[in-house]
Length: 341
Ligand code: SAH
Ligand code: SF4
Image (cartoon, rainbow, N blue to C red):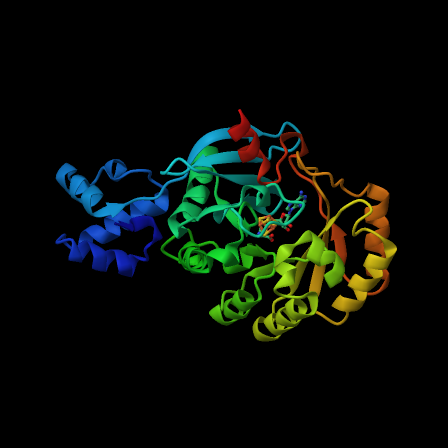
């Protein structure tokens, strides 16, 4: 059975007609889906027997709140969303002066196995549907009674390892008759799935591409991120240059600073040399400790020194402000602790 929440209005219209129902019902159903209903029964302007027919023909993906933590420091909200098959993913709402941002998940787990990542420890269970990604937004909006106007695909999972559903999500979330979130307000973060970066460049969404780089050379990146064994640093950076050329969009490089591992002056020098001349920005993020992993985040002093070295060489770099530090707002950890409980 097909998931109605992952369909465009045109697809839904065709599917509704195929199920022997009148065409005008599609628009009514679609409007309920955009509101974020969790069942056909909530579509109260449809006759009861029609709702029953729909549930025989279609599925409707959901993301309901299983747990919710609110930061006492800055109001950041962390959700554990339950999916229809019982699996869970995480999402985080952050409040900024420019509005409300949701960091959402694209997969249950992740198969990329980065050494510092709580999600990577779980392996991949399954891809999310576009409808499940959208549901994370509508559930958060309805719960908090606000409009999410920025989205970052930086929760659990590797969006480009779930390329088709991620693209479908982008198409729906930016559609004027759907959530209508501007692509310019969307960031997609990837560990560097090079063939899909090439495809994304051609897909024509003016979103911000974030690359989780975390190391300036192959020797180090090989040990932190297994994907580097397939696509080397230079191959990845060439794909990034191509992306900038094709889209005109600045790339954002994520660089988590791990104490004594990749936060040395030598690493900062190498990174500056590699990124020289590229339209980019570097986000420095002190690594979060993860239970079961031994790495430690770089101290403030090392982070400032690293940033200064980059800026002195003309590379735009900022240290990311941490939000929700009292609720462990970075992804992958709430699910792990909930499963242990
Ligand atoms: N799979 C994608 C998006 C999800 S991870 C990616 O890797 O880019 C989102 C971000 O969180 C990535 O930049 C990732 O490297 C970072 N991250 C993972 N574990 C972390 C940790 N322990 N501390 C800080 N950042 C972490
Ligand atoms: Fe997957 Fe991203 Fe975590 Fe790496 S950092 S394991 S790609 S979620």
